[in-house]
Length: 163
Ligand code: 4NP
Image 1: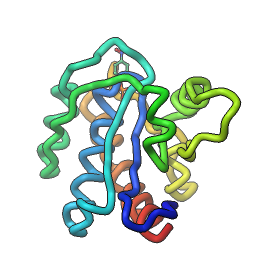
Image 2: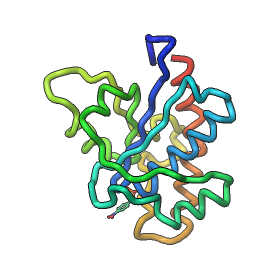
Image 3: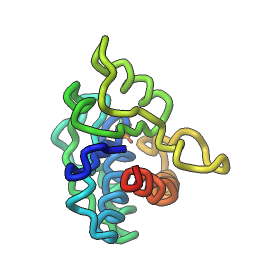
Image 4: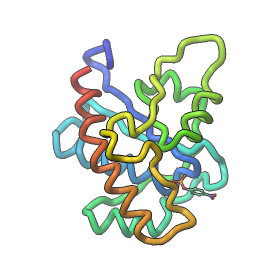
């Protein structure tokens, strides 16, 4: 994935608001990176395609659900930026809408460094293709998001470090 062996691999998780799904993905991934002692080799970030929540902490329901699994979500929401397509190796959309919006935001006319994919491309077919947006639903939606992220992120890390 990264042909510059001394440079870190960089992965960016993207959802709509950057307050529920993608900050949770960032938290799950950071935890795996730390457990593996790969902090110098892998950089993790998240962003939203929308601008409504810029500067906000993750949704309190998402933070509580994550905390119960030992994950502290400390990110602040930001919007996906054109520079992200050159900074990151892998940009993972949480659902098909996100992926379409990511690809629309990509620089025109050049092949960007970043590969853009669905998070669920790292899951088997027993999982849905979209990480469901939990924002307008109940507590079980946040658990479902975390279940999907915890299933997918080990494979994301494997791909990043094995190239
Ligand atoms: P996220 O969830 O995309 O997983 O951060 C949402 C957060 C906020 C809104 C929608 C989805 N919103 O409409 O404000």
